[in-house]
Structure formats: C-alpha cells, structure tokens
Length: 397
Image (cartoon, rainbow, N blue to C red; front, top):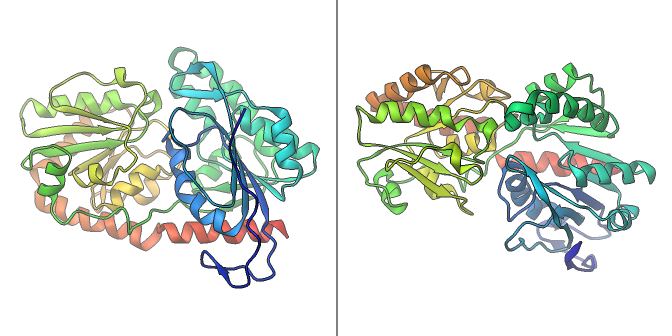
C-alpha cells in the first residue's frame, strides 16, 4: 500500500472556499472506494476524474484506489491511498490487493463510504463500513454480471452467473444506490436488489465537449486528411465493447469508399482490432476532445452499457451516433433525429446505417445539431454534480 498524498484538512476560513460558503462548516468526511482510478482512463476513472474537483471543494476526501502506472491527479483536501495490483488480470480487468488495516483506519472516521465498484477494494470497504456501522452508498456504473459475461468469452456465462449472485449480495448490503438511468434500476430489480435508490443521470461538460469550428481543421489537428470521412469510437477496447463488429462493418464500407477512416481512441485488447492502413489506433488520450471533434460519425457497438459517458460526450461534440439499444442508449438516441440504433453484432445493419450517413451529408448536419441539443437539454454535467453534492449532504444528516 502506498499513501500518495496525506494532507491535513484545511481549516474553515471565514469567507468562501472554492465557491462554497465555509463559515462555521465542518467538512463532512467521505471515503471513496474504487477499483479503477486515474491514470487508468476507463469509464469509472474518467467519471471520478471529473467529479472529484467539485467534491473536494465541499467535502474532506479519502480515496482508496489501485496503483496504476503513471502520475496521479492532484486534489486539495484529499488523501489518496493506493494498493498494488495483483499479477493476474481478466481480459482488461485489473484488481488490487487492498490493505485491511489502511481501509479500516480510513473508514473509522468517515461519515459516508462512497463506493464505485464491487471489486476487491469495494468489497473490503463494504465489509468494513458494515462492521463500523457506517453508511455506504454505491454508484452503479455497470451491470457487472453482463459485463463479466461478455468480457470473458468462453467461461463468461458461468462467471457472470456467479457475479450476479455476488452483486445481489453486495448491493443489498449497501445503504443507498445511485443509478445513472432508469434502465439500470430495471436490471437491478430483475436481480432482486431491493436497496433504496436515487436516480442521478450522468451528464457532460458541454463547455469542454463542443463541436469544432471547422471539421476540416479538427481532422488535420489529429493527423487525418481533411477530406476523409471519419467513423469513430472512444473507450476501453474490451470484448463487451464488441469492436470487431465495428471493424468488420468499416472494412466492408471502405472497399467502395477509400476516403473513410476508422479512428479508435482508447486502450485495452488491441488485438481485437484488425490491422489496416485506414484504421487509426490513437491509444489512450488524456484529452479526447480533439479526437471526437475530428469524427463525422460515432459508433457504440457495445453488448452492455449503463449510460455510456463516451457516447454522451460524442453527442455533445455534435456527432451523430449509431449505437446498440443497450442500457440507457435507447433512452437518448432517437433514430433519425440524433442517430440510429442497430441490434448487437449485426454487421449488415451497422454498415447500412454508416453508409447512409456517409451518403447524406445534409442529414448528418441536421443530426449533428440535434445531437448537441440532446445534451444541452437533458445531460449537463453541472446538474449531475449538483445532484451528487446535494444528495450526499442530505444523506449525511
């Protein structure tokens, strides 16, 4: 176990602190337990990366996280404990070896444990919080049994069934669950998870994820010819993301349209993607905005999702989306308005939808405007942050 930072809580000043009224206020202490954290940049880590700057202004934070290679982000009023990774991994899933002594010491003085995963760190935090009679809130980022089933291939069904039973036990021992979508709640209900829930939809920082002033210049900025038609994906390269379906559909289209490029931003199981001169593997990027802005069409071919933050970010950048109707995607992708839906693994229909948008640039432009407006109307990040802070504060009382 490594303590990356151990800062003493700031004494409450007599005026405002970082935009919050601090006079006479004792910082509520929150322990955040997560099995994914920067510098790894999957959905959970990116979610925390954007949420923590607001939380550390309002609360005193202790973070329990795995030690991934690279530099950790820096937050005021925050202590970060990291734990070494074990040697084995499953697909692109990594697990840490938490220190029970460190976890108990951190949770003993906490008001709330805010959990992000059901992995080893999340499990240790849950058991400790229950033993110390602490409130524990879990944010349900994914339907873990579906993710495991799709990620592990041959043994996925059996392992997914075991994870389903474990997730039922885990979530039913929490005090409250935060849900990103109504579809997530339906999945939990089907698994007989009865813990009280609060709906806090994910949002996007629309001031950061914006359409480019010039699509041509946006493409040149990331090294792509300005007259190319760019089909894109951003996220973990994992089996449940089903990228072979996207790659197969792209190569079929590329046979008749050599101006097309497939831009994949992310890291993971790169061998899932065939090597081709028109398939651009950009790798993991700290700032994905320039790459999104270079895309003409965004594809989410996933087998399982909850909300898909990456898809929302693409919409915010004014990109029409073609996606599978999994999780909440069917709730905010409106066929013919801001994108299209297609059945999972259906290469033929995906290729047809992509080709249709390539051949109809005027429709693509209209859908681009509608994509951006979807986020502005319903999924602003500032609303997500406000709900998190309000609910955490109310729940501690």
